[in-house]
Image (cartoon, rainbow, N blue to C red; front, side):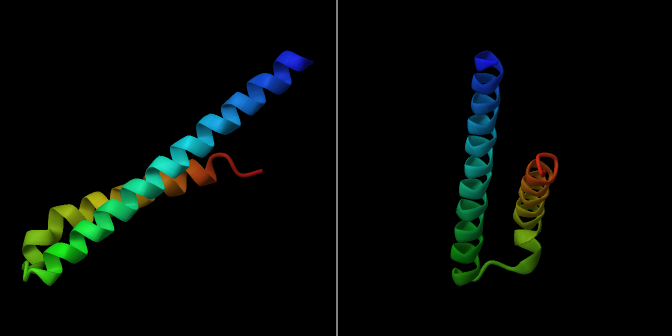
Length: 69
C-alpha cells in the first residue's frame, strides 16, 4: 500500500511541476507579446507568437482537464 501512495504522490508532484512550467511559459509569452506591442509591432508580425501562446493555453487546459477528479 505504501508503494501505491508514494507513486501517487510522485505522479501528483510531476503534474504540479508540469502545470507550473506551463503557467511560467504563458507568462513569459504574454510579457514578450506586450513588449513587442509596446514597441510598435504590427498585428501580422505577432500572428505566430499569438498562435504559440494559444497552443500553450490549450496544453495547459489539457493538462488540467485530463487530471480532474
